[in-house]
Amino acid sequence: MIGGTGVLNVTAIMDVYAPWPYHSLDQVRCDVVIDRRLAAGINITVTTGGATVRTAEGTNITGINIDTTSLGSAIVLNNGTVLSGDVRMRTATGGGTLYWNNVVVDGDRTLSMEESSGQLRTVIVQDGGMGGTVTLLKKSVGGPIALDMELSGDVSGTVGASRDDARFNCSEGFRCHDGAMTSIRPAESSFDVRMESAGGIEARGRWTP
Image 1 (tube, one colour):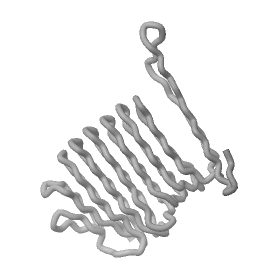
Image 2 (tube, helix red, strand yellow):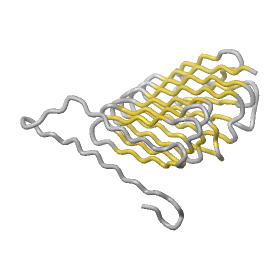
Image 3 (cartoon, one colour):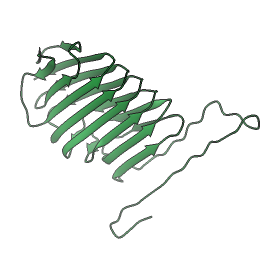
Image 4 (tube, one colour):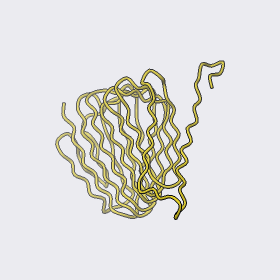
């Protein structure tokens, strides 16, 4: 439906209920494809299963909200994606994964990942300034948390954890101190990562000119 603001609201409902013994479904996959020319705010709720969002170059994402259960979630923000809204991923047991590959940021954005018992994994690759700042909040009740951050050029990163025994691996361009990990060069474009879990926490950082 297109209103006076020129916004297109689409609701897609996939019902794959198949009660035994009349029907049986081992695996079901539903694909929703959005033209990259259309700025998209994405909201996904899955009762049983998981969800994956994958962007293409030139995509403008005004926000992502995912709530899934047993199979977890994955968000893949590919090279050239413009992020002009916040991202929230909440999973129950299947874990969550976020891949960030040279994204353009409009303003100050917040990314949050929540999980009950599975792993939360984030891979960040950013070459140069991204136009804004990103706060990444990762919280797992009992599962492990992993972060891999690869930065270069005019972008910086800071990583903190709620546990004293969090494992930090500081490669070139990063220093580890007082339960945190910080890149040695400050920059206007920056990542501020905060991790909280009763399970293990592990992070690796590398920054190059």
